[in-house]
Length: 124
Image (cartoon, rainbow, N blue to C red; front, side):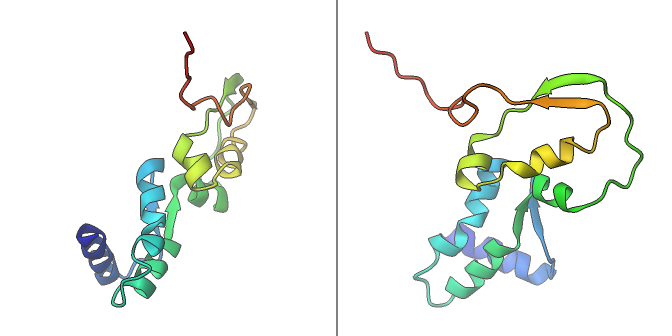
């Protein structure tokens, strides 16, 4: 928890509005600081505010209009959600929204996408 406090201190000094992560596991951990430090009298409110400023890159991209011209990609692709992105952060629509800005790109869903990354248990 000491490292979480130090990270909060460091980001508070920067004055940034948004903290963007491109790694789903790391992002879900940062978004959880408010819960992690909920009982810390000196950091509870600060950690909650810090977590509220954390976003995955796909959330940021989905909020913005494309700035560069999009070139067509006549492809059919499958997008697989990162486990921590879909389960821990609840981010599912935003990556697809960002991909939808690419002309001619067809994104298809994989079967059982919510369970595709779940460990498989073998019974022998």
